[in-house]
Amino acid sequence: MGRLLVVIGLLVTGAGLLIMLGVPLGRLPGDIIIRRGSGTFYFPLVTCILVSVVLTIIMALFRR
Image 1: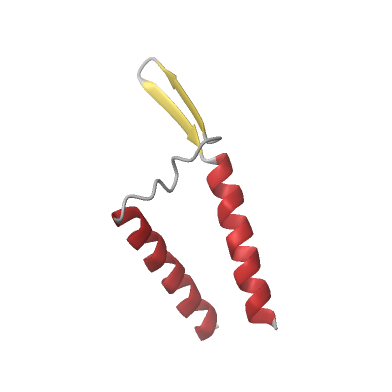
Image 2: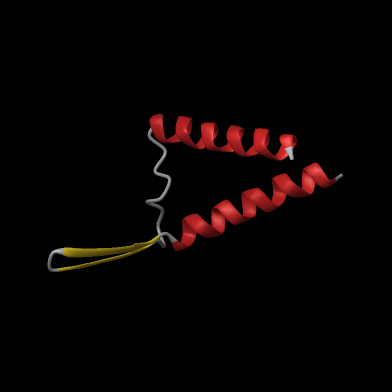
């Protein structure tokens, strides 16, 4: 459990550093943005897929 928490902390820190460097996490091509009137609906489809693939690879490496 401790190892998993450390990995999650490192991932969050890494994502924060990438955002600070200007990498557009959450604004990738393929993310769905609908603006109507005063409301906005945002669904980060491609971002979710990318995060899922990265987490799958990391977890597969830790299982070995």
